[in-house]
Length: 402
Image 1 (spheres, one colour):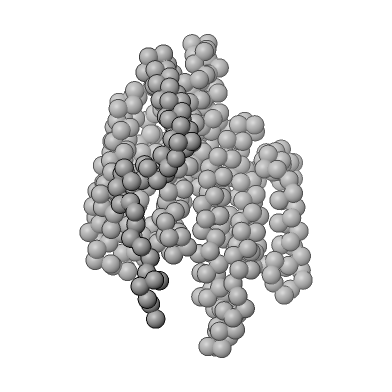
Image 2 (cartoon, rainbow, N blue to C red; image 1 turned 30 degrees about the vertical axis):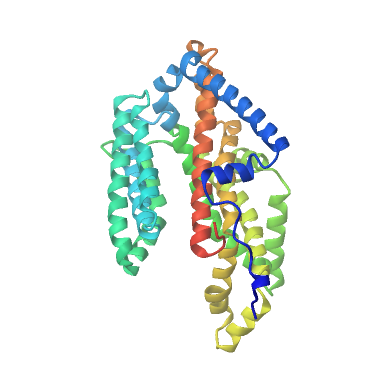
């Protein structure tokens, strides 16, 4: 029984801005002194950085070469295919975000207004127009998603899932083309692919394909068949014992020696294969960790209701295991995005490779700081976005309360 003595006293400070500042930044004189010192340091740093960005830095190296940084040597006449892929991606993102995250309308509208800032970049008219169309299509998709999200249409959500599964093959087909005799969909050789486009293709293919492979390897490692279990263990331990650059070198140099000349894939496909095989080994260990976190009672309960081993794993165990490893999957996606910069060592010009080739030109000598600041900002923005989306997925699935 609750008595008056057990009742907690009222808070001594209200949840106001001044109350928060007093509690967290100025609780005593030592903390207040440290806070003031840090504020002075932060102000001086911000002043120095802004002064360099606005007054001293020469951003012409970015504006002139923005298209090359985005798509490499991809033909200008076929850039509409790249922007079409971006428009489809923006539509899918808008529809998905509006359907599943329709409760935070104000925050969502702010997030989708950010792409319009790309219009103010010192870029060519074609590039600026492509970014503007992408932002507009994203907002249109967001509006449709907000409308259908309130209706809670299960059929529409299933269609969205199918759309995400088909997006990567469609994007690869549009970017590569298929007509060998020219025309609007002329075949573009992969040696012309580059820039941020190539970075996203390598990371996207590596993650999408390695995910089911990792699940199969994790399940195979727990198989009761010794041959399957032994093969999966050997593959996982062997791949995880070598660095990614070794796998890339093997794919680029050893694979052409082992296959007939006509059967050797091009360099980009070999790099995608290396990323996929390397990521699958780590994905398998992540999934295995999630599987081991499932109690035996779940298996026994599934068996009690008459489910066979396949349905038990598919309907009961795997959904819980994958839900539990959402944070590590987010980290793997960010890591794969950053690791794509290693392909410069095997001769592929990704985002970092194009930047280095631009800085090698005599007219841009001394502009290294501006270029690397731009690279760091782009990597940070996309890594932050993936981290933010991962946290929202965690909160939506109940993994995290934040």
